[in-house]
Structure formats: structure tokens, C-alpha cells
Length: 303
Image 1: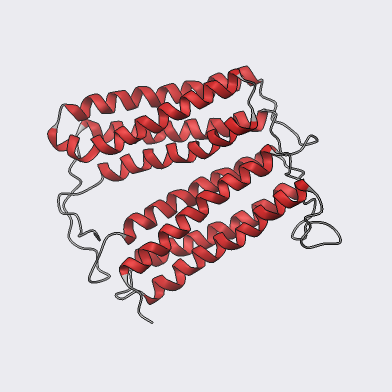
Image 2 (image 1 turned 60 degrees about the horizontal axis):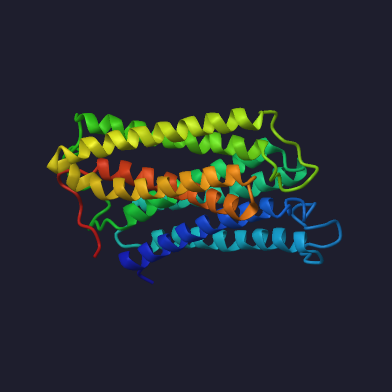
């Protein structure tokens, strides 16, 4: 069976959505105090593989079962990449990385349960999810590029190579990453541990929140510089203005939710939105970086 490029692109988009959704369902497990709803692994309990006898168990069980959907979506990407004509080594490699990453998440998930929701294992769980979202984003981008052979088409250097904005964009990506990482430390120190008995990090909440906020404001500052520099150059404006505006909108929304949840005592609903949007913030920063790397001779993109 021959697989079309458009069909493969749809499969990568499906995997991307599934990987995003399981981050949201995973955060709901913690926020509802259901982290130990299934106190064993791979079974839910000592006597049952699947147990929905309580609300907490059902919530944790649904999240675990959805892992099967995620695994199927990334395995499908590998299988279809092998059927794609011509074969694309870049697509095969990234699809395999997704499968390996999901397998790693399953192992980390087991460690999270076995260690009683240790905050460091939870942080690792989330950061690996960010890595998987990064890989999935790149896979979708690469899958949207049509090539007639497996050979890399001749490309010019990135249009922005050597320009000051190139370094600013890289700084923006690093600052955003730092904001995301420090955000996990806030979560690891806060009240939503997934279970009342779970260990917390030893950071004082005001201190770690201010540290996280400092990186968020650094990101905003670099973003403003990026917007200013983009407006001054028509070539840069064509490449970066749209992704930068998207990034600005998402960061503004995320910042508003962050301050609102802090002053309202971190209600579950706002925290869930904050977690989901934090992934969107990272993806927007990644999108800006991708746009900054476009060359003068880009490959044809599927309509």
C-alpha cells in the first residue's frame, strides 16, 4: 500500500494532537488529586488491571488508557513513513524518536507511581512531554515539505543568517524554555501534588514564583525587542511578524492566567488552563525559531 504525502501529514498531525491531549489529561490527574488513584503499575491495583471503582481511580485509569491512543498514533507514523514513496529518512527518524519517547514516558509514569508522586519524577514526566511535542512539531513541519527524492534539496543559507535578529530569536527560545522549566518547579512546590501525601519540593512559594516570573518577564522583554527589530526590516517582517504576533498573544494570555491563579489561590480550573497554555507558549517560541531558519530556497510545501 502506497502512502501519499498528504496522508502521512495527516497522521503526524493526529500524533501531535494526541501528544498534546495527554499532557492535559495528565495535568487533570494531578489537579484532581488522582495521582495515586491507581496505586500500582502496570495494574491499577493489586487485584485489578483496570479499576474504575472510585472517581480518582477512574481519572487515573482514563489517562493510562489514553496512553494507548498516543502509542498507536506514533507507531502509525513509523509504519506509514516506511511506506512513503520515496522514503524520507528524516521522517522515519523523527517518527522512531516519538515511539522511543512514548516508551520512555511509560517507564517514567511507572516510576512516578512507585515513588509516590516524587516531584522530580513528575517534572521529568512533563519535560519529556515537552521534548515529544517539540519532535512532533518538527515532524509535522518536515512532513509538510514535499520532496521527490530522499536527498536533501539544495538550499541557500537561512535568510536571517548573520543578522542581529537571528541571535535574538535564539535568546527568545532559551528564555521561553527557562520559563517553562522554572514553571515546573513552581508546580512541584505548590499545593497540587496529585495526592495529599505526596512529597513537595523545598522551595518557598514566593521565592520560586518570583524566579519563574523573572524568566517570564525576560521572555516578554526579548519578545518586545524581537517585534521592534522585525518592524525595521521588510525581509524579517515577512518571515517573523506573524509568528511573533501569535507568540505575543499566547504569552499575554498565559501571563494573565498566571497572575490571576496566583492571587486567587491557584484554583484547579485556572491551573489546568495554565499548564495547557504553557505548552502552547513553547510551541509558539519554536514556531518563531523555525520561521527564522527558513532559507532563500525553501522546498515546495503541500497546499
